[in-house]
Length: 395
Ligand code: SF4
Image (cartoon, rainbow, N blue to C red; front, side, top):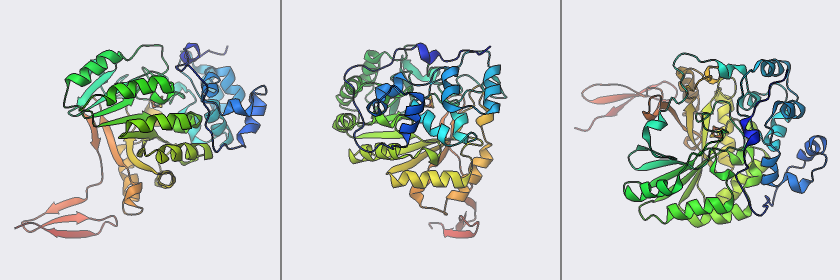
């Protein structure tokens, strides 16, 4: 018997108010998909981000109907005997359906029995964010900045999500009044990162309320938003939204990209709109086994990002959350990939490869050893071609 998965299907959609639509470029190839799977829906609806969330795929029947699962995926889902959160926007479902039955991006959103296998060193919350949670919804780990978990909702659930214990589950994660009080009391906080879940799934009004309150705190110098919305729900990046966001500069946005195939016309347009609003954009990418773990794939992704003014910012080693072994590469493989990028393309195209240390150690950069030796007069450096050069010491 088919198991029903998807806590997300019973959740309240986290927006309200007037419908807003992305105004400019829409890829009309998408409308064949619309005609097939949502025959009663108009093109206007497809462009509405609220429609995309309301019609997102959150149960197996819909998933199978829309994505046409391959044999392995079908077998895996039949074996699932527990509920796992599931949500994919029609937009992103269409993207992965069109990419072919074996495209690596499919495994990033389609549930698998591998998620139920606990491997060596894995944990439900390996980053120990709970230890640094000062008030509900606020994590204070680093000296001058805090993480605020505004919502537990994401437009599409990633199968390797670090916060999978929260995302898509019906929980209250943030007491915003207490968060504000904490930030006001701690004058050392100059940087506030809004995350979740995905803050851009909130309505314009709600998000603006949060931004206004945080911006009004004198010692907060910058606000950052972490989001995957431009990738999985580009319709959300509307003129109204960017006009609102640009009132709260300096505001930075980090976008979660995985693969160059995600740079569709719609996503490129969403990035351009944000960049045109003066918002510095960075990317965050999780290194995923058999998805993007090759220098060629990542170089292509980073080049495409720079073309739409997104600076590759972090490449993350996948966190050892429970059931993540099938997604994790070795750290040595990550270093080898970085060695194939450094020197072979523009520095702007090279993110920092980091491990978010299990146990709450924070992000630690990992890289090839470039400073290889020293004597009384020189330090010895290895360049990208593995040639050795000497740099004179100060005397
Ligand atoms: S977008 Fe981020 S928070 Fe949301 S499911 Fe994916 S990894 Fe988790």
